[in-house]
Length: 442
Image (cartoon, helix red, strand yellow):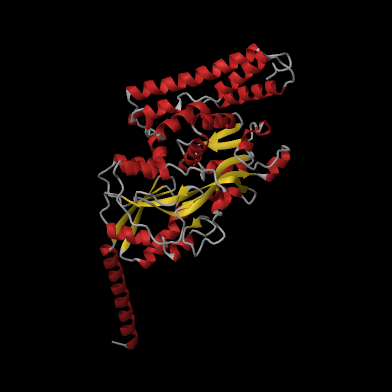
């Protein structure tokens, strides 16, 4: 046999041996199942880096939105799953209350326990915050210029009548990030005052988008000029087109993105290794990539990115109660959908009319009293806080989309809709009763 043929056969044998070894290693690789709400553009850089360092572990990703992901864990207890990885804290609280999470020890990062009143890790030790994001306002400067609108600076600015028809938001029942914004406002201002604020913002809405990313996308496309969103969605390269501007409010909200190990996990050792990687310098560094755009919790990487604690955030005075948020998750979503989403056009008409009549000079005490009552009715939630606290879990907790509602839930939802309609109809009747010729055009 010639030397060339020997070399060729040696090359073939080496290739076969390599392929066999790779196949053998893949066969031995442990599967680590991760349920996440993050899109591939987010999780794939972590997946590639982790598997490169851990060839004996193969990640299997189950990607769903937050609500669907949490339902998947709760409703399919026999499905193999090791890790839950998402942003919305109340989804983790919901899973914790259902016994779906196992204890997890915190990693040493040098991060503070709270950032502007929001706890970084679960105080009970069931999930950890691995990244931070700021909630605020996104706007399109060209759009604002076109309609001669001022730049919004605060949550209260969104009540300004000049923004009527120019604001976009998504429903908290479809978006964990929006649910946290709504819940933060309710916890900061209180149940009644918080809903009054949300109702008046609702009167200024142009639309309610189907998904979280639709807010920043809509602003970029100039379908509306201002959106309520989170920093990484507002600045995402695939939606902003370079025109969107994101601004934190003077009292910002910083919320952690989280990770937990499920109580049903079959590969706890591999799950702990993934968590370790997520908190390592390399894993935390991936968060700084423009396509991901999150703030690392590792102190050595987040210098200058975190707000000063004395800066004052929306949640600073009292902190965020994640347990309360999880307890009333369903009723908050139900009220928002019936009160703000489905009545958006009616709210816009009535708030515009009320404001116009309030701005008219003159009027006696009876007229002013009627206007004040109409304002209260427009801003009154269908259930007071005291009644919400007494509701059973079946009516107050999560109401999964697509699930058949019980007779009790259907009757309760009808009552909510009826009360909202009654309050708004009564407010409209009051406004009609004191209308003047100059205000009837509203």
